[in-house]
Structures are given as structure tokens and as C-alpha cells.
Length: 259
Length: 270
Image (tube, rainbow over all chains, first blue to last red; front, side):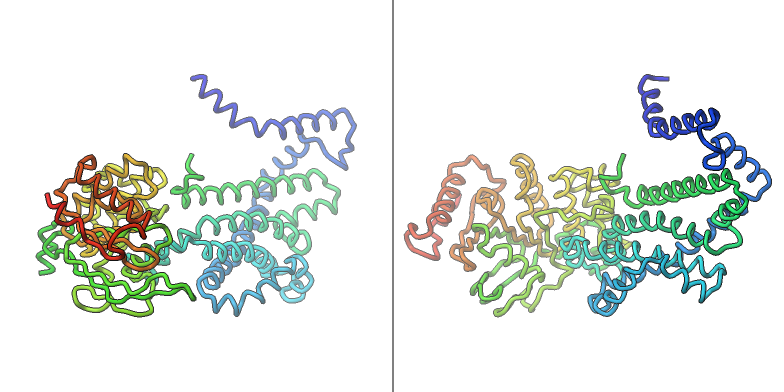
């Protein structure tokens, strides 16, 4: 392997050095008895708990339920945000009509709606979907609106003078011009999606990762609680990678995204 | 007729030729400020006219009015004797290339083109010498290459009137001369009417049949250039003409004869 190749692998591994070091320190501290296993079980114990949970299939069931909720809520809230953002971004009249109301609703933290949501939907699936959808809606909506409004007017003028109008103008100029901003909203809301789902699941659920951790807390299974927390971190990272993949693909024309 | 033109596959065929353009008493205001006053201009089919003037004199506004990008308050604008330009016969090239960064070079050239004429885009791209860059993103091109793509994008529609709004202003001197040659060649093969706004007197003399000077929103000079083409920039007549025009722009009051003068014509016929 060439020197450059090894250098590249080194570059790849570098970001993982701090967490790895932390885990080793943690393991040493736990084994030396400085940490009570009630407070913080050793990494090795957590790994064992994770292995046991996944071998029994219980873990995957919870992960599947949570992922489904997250994606469904994101699909609903994200597409609503995209459509409304496109509408208010394109039409001044719709902006005047809707924007004030949306800005008011935006300032309500979605989690503050939990009591109301439980009254409406009980602890049903719909409650979780509703909360995730509401939380995801606003980042997508705001960034779509902003993206549409900040498309270079010189390009629109050019396209119109070259005979583009209506849907073709939208498809060839306005939508691609807004994509960078829309994707910022998507990345932001993908992070928010997990945060809201976790809270919703810990408060009211009978399945999912949040339920699994709350259940484990009742039985003082700190290792399983930590498995849940680590799972959220991994799933969040995965969702962010997916969003970045979309950026790489849709913005491949952009000098800032060419490697 | 239309079908024949397509079958011969001559891109921007000269069969249709250039458009005649005539402006009568065009006035335009921005608020209280008058930017164009009483503009009269007759341009023959296939003629190459350059509009020069200091920045802010209204020359770009005039071009935008002709392109239909700006309205005007009084006067009339005739395109081949009929009022108002048909937009599919007029194409404008801007100072910044205004390529869509998210479309590859070929797709940019084909913008607004019906699907069945997509191949024409490649032909015109070949004419401007960029066929091998057809799949690149515009961000990968140099400034001069972008303007060549923009030129191809304008020409693929076979315009009968090509409007050029300082298209070479941002280019370096060598690229600019290359582009001037390219524009002149394409104009001679395709036979469209060309209207070039520029602040570069040398560029105007090198390319145009007529140089029109706009000062403070009004036409103050309409000068024929009868030098043989292609025009060598070093020639004595070229230099003399350039000097006179520059003096005229810089010191309007010192020129004998005041506003409208066409004194050079007889001396400059080669």
C-alpha cells in the first residue's frame, strides 16, 4: 500500500480516536471499581446487554418500530413543510395569508403539545407521528421558503427571456435554485426527528427504543438504558449520513460539494 | 418553409436573415429621472450596431427595452415593421453568463429548446469550440468559456436579432479578442442583426458597421465604420477613428459641429 493510502486511512480513523480513548478509560475506571455499575456499567457489560437483546430479537423489534415512526412522521411533516414552503415562497398572497399564523405556531415547542396530544390521540401511534411531523415541519418549511425567495433573480429573468414559464421555469430554475437551502432544512429536521421521537416514546409508548429504555429504568437495568442511548446516537448519525448523501447527489453541480 | 429549414439542419441558417429594427421617440423614466429620451434608431436587417457611452448613460437600459425586459413610457418599437418584438426571434446575452449552475453545459445550451431540436445544441456548441466540454458543470469552466456557452445558448434559437449586453466586459484582454473574432465570424455566417452594448471603443470599431453614442439618455452620435473586415486593430485608420471617438466621448463640448456629426465617412472608405 502506498504511503498516501496509509495516510488516507489515518485521516479516516482520526475522528474515532477520542470516543475510543474515552471508552477505554471508562472500561478501566469501571473495572477498578471507581464507577458503580448502577451509575455507569462498564462498556463491556453494555456490549453484552446489547448482544443479548439483539440475539433475542427484542432489540431489532424496537429499532424497527422506532425507525418506522421516525420515517413516517418525517414523511408527513417534511412533505407538508415542503409543499407549504413552495406555496408561500412562490406566491406573495399566500405568504401574507399564512405566514403570520405559521410563525405563531412555530414558536410553540412541539414537546409542549404532549399533554394535548395525549388527550387527543391517547398513547396511540398517531400521537407519536403527530409530534414528529409537527417538529419536522418547520425547519423544512422555513428553509424551503427561504430557498425559493433567494433564487437569483438574474437567472429567472434569463430563463423567462429564453421562453421558459410556468412548470418548466419552476422545474429548471426555481426548484434547483432552492435545493441547497431545502436540504439544510432536511438535515436540521432529521436531527429533530429523533429528539422528538425519543421524548414521545419515553412518555407514552408500549414499544420502541424509548419504551425499552424506560422499561429498563424501572428494573434498574442501567446497561440497557445505555444501549438505548447509544442506539439513538447511531441512528441519528445514520440519518445525518443519509441527508448528506442527498446533498452530495442533488448538489453535485455545486463547487462546494465536489470533492 | 419552416420544415425545410429544419431539414437542411443548418443551425441558425441565414435563410431567415436578420430582423429590421426601428425605434421612434422612445422615452423611459425611473421615477423622476429620465434615462432614455427621444431615441430614434433604424437598424437594417443583418446590420451590426454598437452602442457606446459612459456607464450610467442609459445604453444597457436601451438594450433591455429592446429585449422586452423593461417597459418604456412613450414612443414605438418596430420589429420588421410590426410593433413589439417576437421574443422567439430575439435573444439576449448578458454581461454575466447566467448559466444555470445545476445543468451541464449541453443542457444549458438546450435551455428552452424543444426536445426534437436537442441535437442543434451540440452543433452550436461545436461552433463555439466547446463540444468536448458538453458534460461539464458550468462551475468548471473559465469566464471566457462560460460566455462562449452563453453565446451558443443564444444562437441555438436562430435569433434574427441578437442583443449583446457588454458580454465581454468581465474578460481578460486576450480572451476578449478571441471572443470578438468568434462573434464576428458567427454573425457573418448566420446573418442575424446584432446590437452590442459596450464601453470599449476599440471593440465597437472592430465589430460594428455603425457606432452609436449615447450620452445622458440621448443619441448624440451615429458613426458609420467602413473599414474592411476583418479589421486589424493596429491600422492607421482604425487608430485615428478610435482616437476621434474617444475624444468625442471624453470632451463632448470641444467637438466642432455639436451634437450629430458624421464627418468621417468620406475619409474612411478604404
